[in-house]
Image (cartoon, rainbow, N blue to C red; front, side):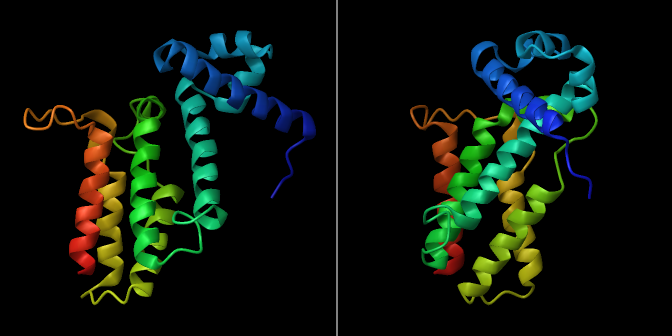
Amino acid sequence: MTTERADAARNRAVLIQTARDMVVEVGVDKITMDALAERSGLGKGTVFRRFGTRAGIFMALLDAGEREFQARVLSGPPPLGPGAEPLDRLLGFGRARLRFLQENREIARAALGGRATVPSGPPATMTQRHIRTLLVQLHIDAADLDVLAMQLTAALEVPLLLYAAPHDADQPEEPFAGRLSLGWEDLIRRLTD
């Protein structure tokens, strides 16, 4: 493993923070490699070397967000972090994961850059392992605990979350993110009752 040079680490931090600020101020659609270089005060070459493509900017933002999310799971306050009962942790994890995905929905869509249908890799793996660990602690009697953990992970990583929120005339006042959290809680409570 190579160590990142101090100036490269500083530039990465500046670029990530600048991109985050731009997402809030101008939205995902207005972020370009050139705009990021200009706003950050760094050269275009630095931006291109760091990210490669426009989608790379958003992959880096997601990666940074995922690292922060995982740190909260590993050492943050309960119920997301350690110290709560397994059921409370599983419920809290699902709610937090769904909130994270909703808050980063536009960034995740931009990160795809037309190359893939869904982001995959370490975040989904971490989610699946964490859910499996909590299922073991809950003493869930499943035919295949690995498959159950994978299926529950799919409920939190589903591509549909990136593209569409269903419109329900029966519940127009309930935000989609709230409905997702309630659905997760209902699913877990049915599994554990």
